[in-house]
Image 1 (cartoon, rainbow, N blue to C red):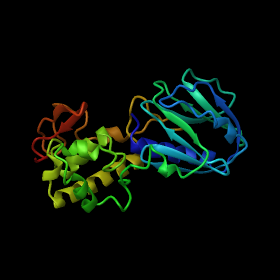
Image 2 (image 1 turned 180 degrees about the vertical axis):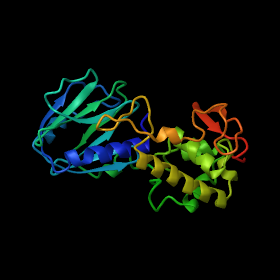
Image 3 (image 1 turned 90 degrees about the horizontal axis):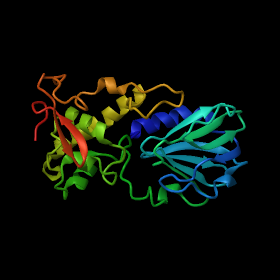
Length: 273
C-alpha cells in the first residue's frame, strides 16, 4: 500500500501538471471503487484546479468554483499524467482531460481507492478526515501530544503509532524503521514508554518520513512515480523485510513477528523494551 511518503511523492510529481489547468472532460470507466465514484464528477468539467494538497494519505484537488476532489490511492492506486491519445490500461478507471493537452488518469487494479467530488463544505471536515490525528511532519506532532495519546493505551507502541487518530501516515514499514531508530521494541506497551523515549520516537518518525520523501518513496511493487520511475528508499531500510539478516548496526539477526496482522521487524540488541 502506498504510504505517506509515496502519496506526498505523487502530490509533488502531479502538482505542476495540474494546478492552474482547466478540466475539459471527465471520463469515468469504472465507478466501483472502495466508495462509488461520485455521480457529480462530470460537473467539474470547465472548472480549474487551483491547488493540490495532502492530508494524511488523501489528496485534495481544490477547484475554482465546484468544491474539490478527494482522492485516496488505496492498496494499489496511482495517478499518471499522460497523452490523451495513449491507450487506456485495463485498470485506468478515471481520466481528467486538461487544457494543457495532457490527461490525468487514476489507475487502481484492486479498486480500493477513492475518487470523490465534494461540491461544498470544508474537505477537512469530511467524515474520512475530521477525526485524523496530527501530521507527523508538522509542529503539532510533539512528544507531549504523543505521550497524551499513549497514556491510556496498553497496546504495543507499534500499533499505537500506526493508529491514524494518534498520528497520520505512519504505515507498517515506517513504523518499524522509526522504532529501530528510536531504540524501542515494537511490542513495548505504549503507556509504559517514558517522555524522553517518546521524544526520540517523534524525532525518528519525522526523520524516516522526511528521508523517504527526499528519496522518492519506498520501492513497492504497486507504486511508481507519476513519471513511471520507482522510488528508491527501500535500499536504506534497517529492519523491515530483513528477517534473520544481520543488523546493519550491531550484526545481531533481525527478528520477525506478526503484530496486528502485519509483519514486524526489530533488532533485539539495538531496541529495548
